[in-house]
Amino acid sequence: MKLKRIYPIYGWMFVLIFSTCFALHGFGQTSPKKYLIRQISFEGNQKTQNTRLLREVAVNVGDSLTLKEVTRKLKESKEHLINTGLFTDVSANMFFDEESLNNIRLHFVVREGLFFIPIPIIELADRNFNVWWTEHNRDIKFLNLGMNLKLRNISGNADELALLGQWGYDRKFIVNYLSPYFDSARKWNINIRTYYTSNKELIYQTLKGQPQYMRNDEEFLRSRFETSMALIYRPRFNSSYKLSFGYYFNTITDEVLDLNPNFYNGGKKQRYGKISMEYNFDNRDNKYLSTDGWYLHGLLSRNGVANSDQLNSWEMEADIYYYHPIRDNWSWSNGILFRGHNSRDRFPYSNLYELGSNPEYIRGYEYYHIVGSTLGVYKTSLMRKVLDQKINWGKAMPFNNYREMDAKLFLSLNLDLGYVLDDYYETSGFINRDLWGGGLGVNILLYNKFSCSFEVSMNQKKEVGFFFHLNQNFQ
Image (tube, rainbow, N blue to C red; front, side, top):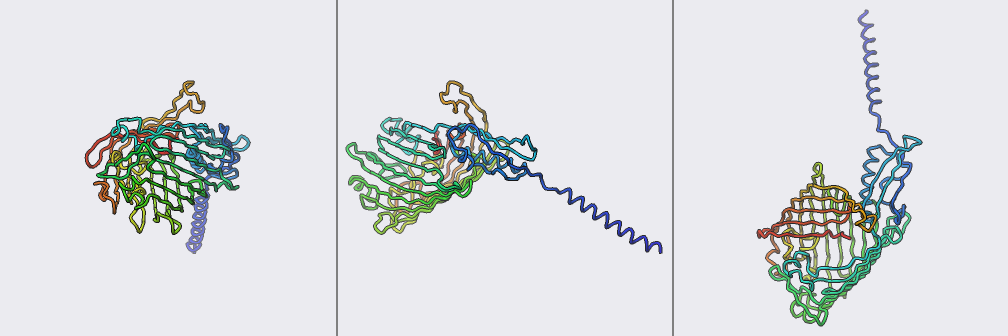
């Protein structure tokens, strides 16, 4: 009888102990403490409006976040501000509120760059620096001279007006205006561009990978005019959409037509309209020289929107780049880009894609002129950061905000693979075959937005050369 009474007592004790342990375990799994974002402040933005800066900050006043979330979003916000190109340096700080340790204040210190930028133009008429230096023996007559005037951040909202006038081998005039966001949510803006250029010298054909030049000092051999308007929608920090409408009118002389009847497919004029849809996703740590993040770009265009248009084709572009930090100071990047046309008729020679300009180049082929209707390139680099420091120029630098320079230097091991498709023109022995090239590089990033590279590369013909590349965002 006693055993029968004892068993129920032990059973109830087991249930009680199990329940208590379970409850204690549950209480131990408390969620991380959250803090209230009480204030977001900025310092150093003498011209840029606070509302424009807030557009790049990944948190809002009133958000409740864990410390881990605040740290991550603070880093993202700093990268967004740097990638606007408005600042030479950005620092982000977090403080606990003096009145309550449950509240956090975020404080950003920015150093604005120059917003009135008159840039003298000394531009190469050649497709890159290396061709001018070696093949044309640094001859000054192969330069274009002029002035590029940039009025940046006009209203303090990252709007920009660029005016360019250039004379020389290439006469060029450009007016480009990027508006500030015009809606209350700061997601919509517009871009208007007008472009005119004329040339006394041009490449009328490509034979065995070498451009065939012609020059006429008495008249311009080719003229090009385009005007376009784009509506830009940026729903999130890292992504944007762009819808563009453009009109193009190009002409050549009888002399060019005689030497290459397919320059504009049998005519001296080429007139057409164009509609494009473009998408960009960019969460790189620094778009000028990246070590972490993704970049995606896609474009689909229709050339020829009316029956009378003289170019009718579809055009597609795609870029995918991935940058991955491996360990301290080491990173690995991979990128794939594609350019392609689809047309029922023979594609005009003048509209072929060219392998040789940034980013459509394969290392080691900078001296060759390789063109085709479709091209694809795969690029990979292993980079090691060997220098990361601030250099103070003091009074030697006349501009206060540029006296302290953030300087980074990377060594890189590079490999590129590519393919250029050409169905109609026998321009080179490099088309319709696999291409590879690569080598070693020194990559420099200054003020968080000026970058260039010096490279020693070899192509599959085992030709070795020294090459210089300037980032296309250099401004």
